[in-house]
Structures are given as C-alpha cells and as structure tokens.
Length: 148
Image (cartoon, rainbow, N blue to C red; front, side):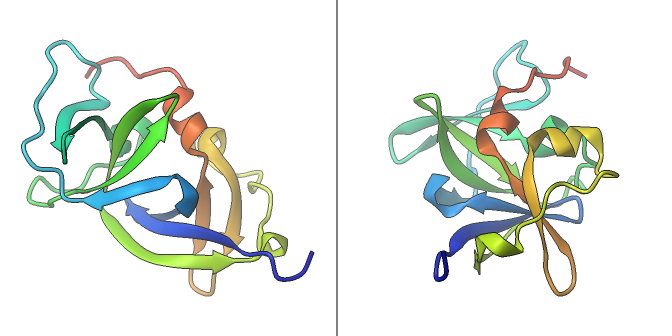
C-alpha cells in the first residue's frame, strides 16, 4: 500500500545505527543519578527516577555484547515500556526521526552477528550505512548475561 511510512528514532551504539519504532519511545533524556542495584546482572545499570517514574536502566552495550564507549562518554537514554514495566535504554547518541517505507525494509543479512540477528526485525540500507531495526520486545526478553 503506497503512502505508508514507518518512523524510527535513530540511535547509535558502538558505531552501529539502530532504529527504534517511534511508537515505542516515551522519553529521550540524559540519565541522572542512576542508583545501582546490588547483585544485579551487569546489563542492569540501575534505576533512575524520571518525572516520578522509576525506570530500570539497561546498559545496551552489555545487553548486545558491544564494545562500550570510553568512560568519559556521557550516555543518553531512551525511555520505553515493555510488559507494563518502564525501562531506560542507555545509548551513545540519538539522531533524527527517520521516515522509511516498508518496501525498503530487508530481511537480516545472513552474515549478521547472531546476537544482533536475535534482536533485529530487519534492516534498511541507507545512503551511507545500515540501519538495524531493534525489536524492543526481543531485546528486553532474551536471557540476561551473567554479571561480569
């Protein structure tokens, strides 16, 4: 059907561009005063209060097995909801909202890293790079890695 457009918030992690469905994004913010949770898996960075809502902060580098940024880098966060729980996904950068047609979407390439393929709902070939569509439900459902 012509005219349909999918909108994605572009986020960067370890040099890779991911697209988060705009319908799932509730907030974009700088996570302040993240409270650590004793004995939590390494992927759980802690909890943060955003306008009276408590969000579980997910370290997306560890969640996806990616190289973390330098310690000086100040992460950003994208607020999402999953199974009636609020989460903040820590990312390196947040870009524009991309308006893409479903016809442009492709299946995951066969050589895509297995962990990425597990959370990717397809790809878009943009002019200068590949956009992986992050399936938020799958990204938050797969088993947690052991604490490092």
